[in-house]
Image (cartoon, rainbow, N blue to C red):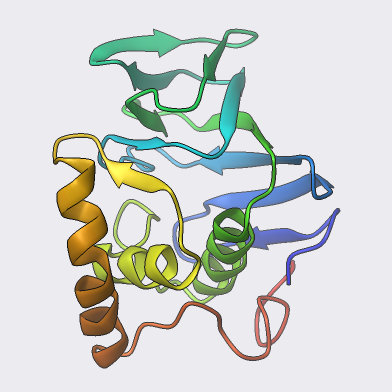
Length: 187
């Protein structure tokens, strides 16, 4: 289980996450993105909001299909139901983004714990993001209300249990024993 003040890092890529605040109401963390990392597919959430603030570097984000770049001190607020693509780093310099998520749902807890665990073990994809099947396992297990931006939500709700089961058969788990702090966890 991630805790406030924990720091997790990928020893190969240098991606780093520091948990700044964690309560049932709010998660605040800072993520450092090495060059050309962090790109994930567009999606939406129906049960929590997000705010991203660039601490240093230049972030690329997409909100409702509009791609833009944010520099230090600039932020974007993502309300529930807004299609978006999380911040990523297209540049050759490091990027740091402070994230705020409210409230902390079961999905957010599961996502952050699995992310920290897999990040510290260099078991994420080349963008330091989840492999798609891993994400399906977490989404299914936590009854998440997060969906891909380009497919009908009803279709996703109907197929998610099957996709989660396929992910489990491939060895992905919704939670990892020993927590993110064991064998190379917090640094």
